[in-house]
Image (cartoon, rainbow, N blue to C red; front, side):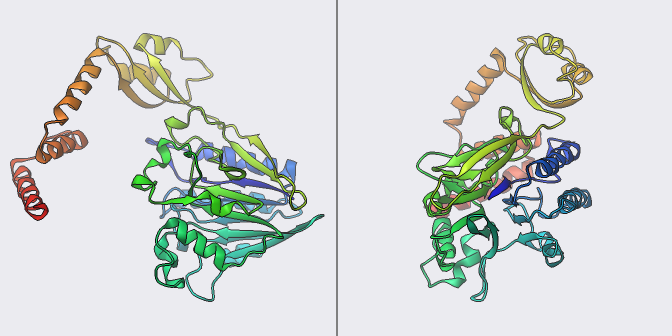
Length: 387
């Protein structure tokens, strides 16, 4: 059985201030064309369909067009999608019963009542049946009420309890579609675009060993394509670059082929190409201006200037050559000295001083006298409570 594994479409996302609609529509169209060429038995979309829990009308239009295009392929290819942490369950599940009639299966919440179980879709090939289990993003609190007190204490125990409750027959071929932060014995490679949703200290981490008995685990949440502990447990990554830190990622579709039970899964990557790349450039202003070509001037560009003397009007001059300028950073002897001085000063800062500095950095203006007074009272009260 052959299927596509994709995830983290993040429809509606902005890259800095730029809309990515054109690029998203381009790569989604490529997925449709590859589906027509490859004729997979299913397409799995492992969460974060939208970038925001309240998507714009434009984002709905992009998703609607994508699903309609997939639905026009004959014979029909089943599409299975789950909600990620960015998605709103209510909004993503709209019209799900209608979509199911067209073999588009949507799962937005884990079981929450004794009568509910994971959505399971069974398909068949020449080797027999394959069961696909859809496990949308969950927090321990979502499922704690299903189990005895003390059973669900963290993310790993929550996922374990939900999967064990299904009583899955692992003598059959089974595929899991899940959107969580799974990690094995080695660290998962992450990037800037997902750092804000990963819990501090890895509190949302789930032990990947829970999934080892599945024939394939189609994961979403992490934006770089990679395996987790085992070859058959994989993040497909995003189909598009969503941060500067993804500059060197090779984006694409993970093509999976299951053979007879017990045989190794076959995995390949089908490249996807966005109309505009994401790139970093470093050098003096004149060096970077001289590197503009027809091939790169329309890309999303992050620039680091190394001029020791401030160049004249760098932003305007760069925008004349690069029409999607993301940011301009300065890295020279002066800025490095200032950064080093700030770090040294931090060692002797009081809480009040640290907060005042943070406030000014975030707001580009200092605290007012009244705000200073209020914060003094807050820190004083906090000190008394700690004491």
